[in-house]
Length: 221
Image (cartoon, rainbow, N blue to C red; front, side, top):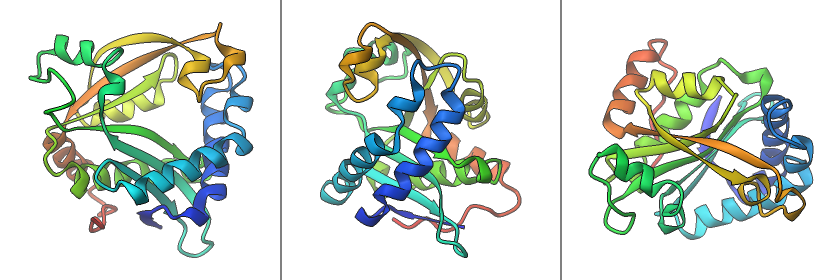
């Protein structure tokens, strides 16, 4: 299994893996999960995200985990440098957490936007390898902190991030339509998003300690 940067031809396969994993995770949590995470919708989403990572490598990173034997996309990951679009929901929580973050203009913070692993490849350490790649990437070379979000009532992701040293700094409520690609049909439905913060250097150390089977490979910067 290799972790590599996503390229445009990966969009459809990345969308398929994203769709399968997300629908399994959120089937009983998120209203109309199958529609929000349809392969059709996600293919366009991944085309845009991959192109962003190519055009602006200092701001966006798109990764896939690929089975070397079958070439199947086993997992997908998106990360970015947090920016002012997070001012309304996340910045107040970061300020309240008293970690020295007052804005996103002068502070580089890595945002782990998306990690989805195909059910057939879960519990194989791919999530850890994605996070390690992101934490060690040139994009976040000057970052001290990583942030991520998880949905209420989905317990798998919080447990994973807490093993890396993440702490919860609060939550915010947002309409499902706004949270998932401006879907106006779901503007009256809401979702509660938990926000987590991690010290980057501690994440790297914890990943080494947790992965004693040497699953972490040399990071491709």
